[in-house]
Image 1: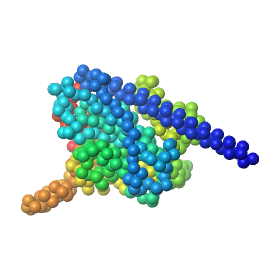
Image 2 (image 1 turned 90 degrees about the vertical axis):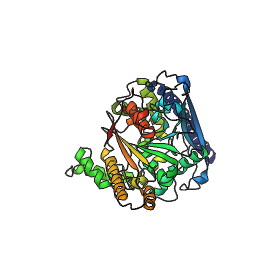
Image 3 (image 1 turned 90 degrees about the horizontal axis):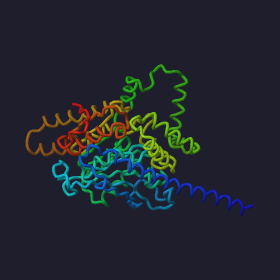
Image 4 (image 1 turned 180 degrees about the horizontal axis):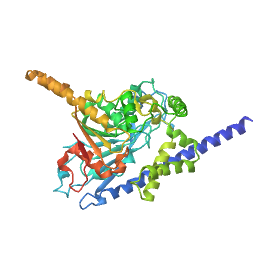
Length: 438
């Protein structure tokens, strides 16, 4: 009986391995399709020639020893190896012929590159509508699959402890190893949603390597009580007199949250056809700006496969956030302490990440800097003030967009990132610009 049972088990394992390989191959095809679609979103570049765009997909080897919060026994669930990789895309645009363009003098030796981090359960190619346009203004644009997502390694989320800090280091350590290996002394760092939250955590540890921080509809800014009260006022949170059934459902959801229940788990349980349909319907309903059926199909495939590959980074959810996407360690208290000169916070005008969080950070930093300035008596104290001051905060609002600002209004999104990283004076007059809040 043992031999047939072993053959059956081996057959099941082989089948699962083959299916995994097929999913990886199909996700790479979806990645290539989105890369190809990116050429459609370079309309503001005069004389645009797709042959002047250079894409480089890469897999950077991350030393296992550098992952300080990851259990030594953890292995990649995709490859079965103890070796880890960080996947991403690098984009360069040949500007040599654009002598009159403000970006023509930008070189790798004179300006920092732009590094983009995606949000929860997304990937590097979520910026496919932006990367070419942004590469016209930055010497290089990198978009990375964070560890545990996309085509980066997916080790078991087995950490040395359950702290917020350990979960943050799972992502930060690999980012820093990649930066060092690529000799990037300074970068303009942009992060969307969870990627924005993790960008703050990175700046706390390595501020000397960030020229400018751009938080793109960041999660986890406000304190729980403030955010919940604000959501009720905006009609997107529960009122105090909701029915008992709602509270019962909420209690069940809280339990599931603590048990590492994630949205991707639902997709893994469903048959593939149903899972794809769920993602497809989400894109059609949620992202009206994406009207092309082929583009919808490529994004559906990319998001679906990203979700059904083995769980890894997604299991950081309840370590970092409370139910309702509220931070256990809110960044409203952390951003004012960053040793980064300037932070730009960008929101959609229909964003469920409320712009009031960004405005509150701006107010706190301005008040702290004003108090610090008024306390200066001599030059020695002025030098200390420069060291102690809070970042200058800018807040931008993107029209006609919700949380997925890079997809819903890619033109204003690009303008916002360019203004943040390069200055308002270099943005093409053809490009719609965001609302800059005082």
